[in-house]
Image 1 (spheres, rainbow, N blue to C red):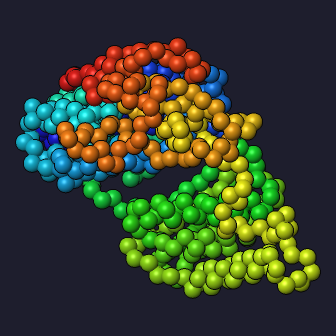
Image 2 (cartoon, helix red, strand yellow; image 1 turned 90 degrees about the vertical axis):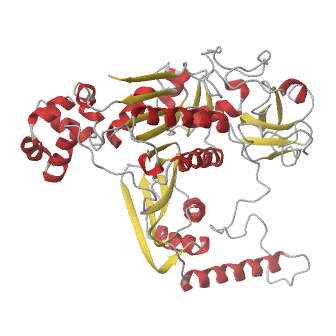
Image 3 (cartoon, helix red, strand yellow; image 1 turned 135 degrees about the vertical axis):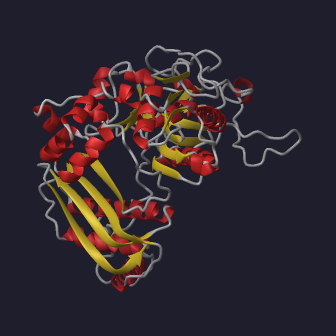
Amino acid sequence: MRGAPTILHLDMDAFYAAAEQAAKPSLRGKPVIVGGLGPRGVVSTASYEARVFGVHSAMAMAQARRLCPNAAYLTPRFSLYRQVSDVVMGLLARLSPLVEPLSLDEAFVDLEAGGVEPRLEAARAVGERLRRDIAAATGLSGSVGLAGSKMLAKIASEQAKPDGLVVIEPGTEMALLGPMSVRAIPGVGPATAEALRRAGIHTVAESAEAGEAELVRLLGKAHGASLFALASGRDERPVVADRDTKSVSVEDTFDEDLTDRSRVQFEVARLADRCVERLREAGRSGRTVVVKVRRYDFSTLTRSETLRGPTDDPSVVREAARRLIDGVETSEGVRLLGVGVTGLADYTQEDLFAQAAMEREALEEAQRAQEEAPGAPEHGQAPGPESAPFSPISEPSAELPRHWLPGHDVVHAEHGPGWVQGSGVGRVTVRFEQPWSAPGRVRTFAVDDPALTPAEPLPLVRPQIPPGAPAAGLPVVASGPSGPAAGWPPAPVGQPSGAEPSGLSSAPAMRPKPVSGGGVGPPRREVSSP
């Protein structure tokens, strides 16, 4: 344990939902729920306005809709969240070379390794500056905990939420920890908590009083000894930068069980491509391809294949995943599919079997194209679109109607940038606004309107342009009610200007006090414990 609170834990507040509110002026101060929108979807993040109704992360989306029917329900935009996360992690890297990311929105920082004096006042000043910098760079808020160990720093950041800073001063650790539930200790999940409850142990103080021998008897040597040390306030775990990622994987749960074999093959190929995309973003390659299948009866199985060498080639991973799924019976129904890569490395070695399969597919595709071309020699009836063989590797036909996901970005040739509010029965409803504009107007189009196209997320904070400099790289802002006249100068985040347009059907606005630099939530708090 350190004698000064120089381990910092940052946790962004309601990250996904807060990013969506910052990007969509019409949703600020209103319940926003991000996650899978199908019948089997799960809540990823709920805004603080939605949490008032009892909605929380990992809740079934169907239950969330019952609790908060008037919320805005959006599908995640991970490209935006990664962009914001990169900015936040960059700010943390300025503080210290020892930054341990836990997720896109959470990380530990060793301030002493960055040259911060081991004094309470110095650590507090760094935490305050970090919160201001995050708000200025992203428009979002984060909660900061400062303590002499990782466990206590994380507990402090939880107490600081939302948009606060809590310092646990040396010597006050046990007074704070004692009354807490054993679930506050890292590594204590439902099963461990139940084992302790049956022994009459409910709080951290009771765990420490039970003694190491009793905890070892109940939980085993390694787990029991670790739990006793943490319950006694001893946490010597260092902040570890550049954690070694052991695997990369993606998975999808489907609204309806998949029974069609071709559809299963297509979904596996699509997941393989997404998995490789993440693999490349991490700058890694992998040697073992894993396919996960959860069937209609919730039974789950995995199949794996180890390649000759590490690879980050999508065709290699697709081919291996195809071979694996071909060996699994899926006709009775599949509710979840996943593709992962393990055995990670920093270099690649091509798989000859996958290369051969890729060349074979290219040859077959060329032969089909030749047979279907006008004037091709007739060898019987040339296959038409209905009879052409289905390739699980190919992309869906461009002729199919486009699928517009709620919350995703679009741009219209006339009206400019906006986001999808919803779609159905051949129509898509779009609200045209930008992060720095007033709440925009709503318009409805046919799903195949050629003037409407998908777009990349806009930055949450409008870039500052020096006087006289060209506005190169800035998105074109449409004129009219959602254009410059209504949106510039921008309204502060959390204080949208102008009246709410009638096109958005949602709960009455709940306007909390604005937060410095952006975000939605109660006013910031700064306390020291106890």
